[in-house]
Amino acid sequence: MTMNAAVPLRRGLLSISAAAVAWGVGGAVAALLLRTSGLGPVAVCFWRFAVAAGCLALVPTGRRRAGDRPGARGAAVLTGLGLAVSQCAYFGSVQYAGLGLGTLITIGAGPVLTSLGAHLLLGERLTVRASAAIALALGGLALLFAAPAAGPRPLLGVGLAALAGAGQSGLTLWARGGGSARASGGAFTTGLLCLLPLAAVEGVLPTAGGPVLTAGALLFLGTVPTLLAYRWYFTGLTAVPGATAAVLVLLEPATAVLIAVVCFGEPVTPALATGSALLLAAIAVLTREAGRSAGPA
Image (cartoon, rainbow, N blue to C red; front, side, top):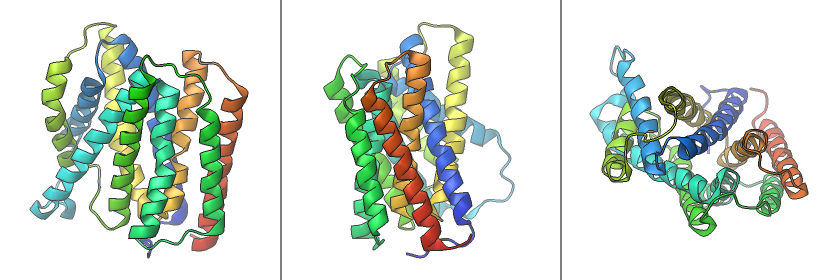
């Protein structure tokens, strides 16, 4: 499949890496909100989408862009539904299985599902190095799964994490296949409208914690790991092969694990250290492989 020449490879790699780190930080912020604000996972996801949609509504758009024409509304709806399902499931996995395990399983499904789908559906070729890097990443995840779960209902959390990973993989494959997946106001508005009834039942207003801290955390969650990170991610997908992107996003669990250890006091075990090292090694291998296959950017 031909990459978009308008986006240099190095920029695409940087965009996806930045998005993954932002998502890792966002997962930690969501975990903090779930612990301190009295909000549930659906309500946190609702506010995340509401802030993102509100920011986009306040930005002057000038001339109507091609992606905002009526023909793109269906794409915005599909993107919004996919984001709502994947993000709600992810926040649920963080609440029930813990930040580290929930993030690891969510992202761990990416390399397998996205790479397999890109190979079978999009005709992308898996090189020997790419296959080896994916195997290395899965080995790292297997070691990380040995870390003790921090949530109250690990089985439910694991199931929600798998659902979140499948939803994110579907969006990735759709965008790689030429779908108009973009972090638009229509997508975020669709997501928040879908989430509103469930959030109202769960409780849409905070019931605990400091209002300034809660408002600041929700504002950050709706801007950096949502509005900005998804734009970085979809931009990067126009230049980076699907298999490479699937492994690059493993920076998200690496970031989440680091924050969990440093900020939440989760223990550092040999399995945690070794698994994280394997994930980073896989990212390095895939990044080098992308550069060799595409040539100078």
